[in-house]
Image (cartoon, rainbow, N blue to C red; front, side, top):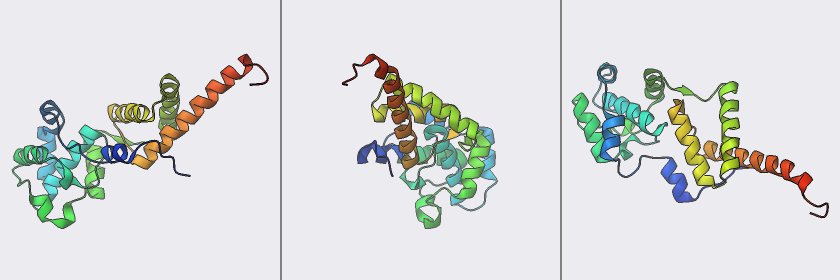
Length: 191
């Protein structure tokens, strides 16, 4: 059964680039290091280096890969393109390159030292941490924002919006059940 904790607009916001990226964030997350530029420069074709460089920047900034790299704000695409000597519109011209390819994603994850949230230990640690946060505050969107930020800080690639909602819903249910277990003995029998 799907868990829907977020509104459609909140879900959309969590699955794409923001419409505008603050200049400070642009410099911090979209500035390519020499190693980043070298890795992009090893790719052939007009769109491949830019696609890879945008995938790197998106992972660094968002903690996930948006489904369509051409949705990057124009300022961000131009900023990244200038650093590698590419034309910003090359992704839109090459209809096959709008999405980060599986290879781009794998290379970006490896290059930045991220990892997928696949190990049982990582999943359990994140779940336990999130249950504690759910005990502190119950607002679904706040809980999911907190989870997304934790995953990005720990360099764990964020799951899709449905997966994030599922994890958030499970954590909220566990927190509610835990609260009930603690409170039940304090309540009169008729309650």
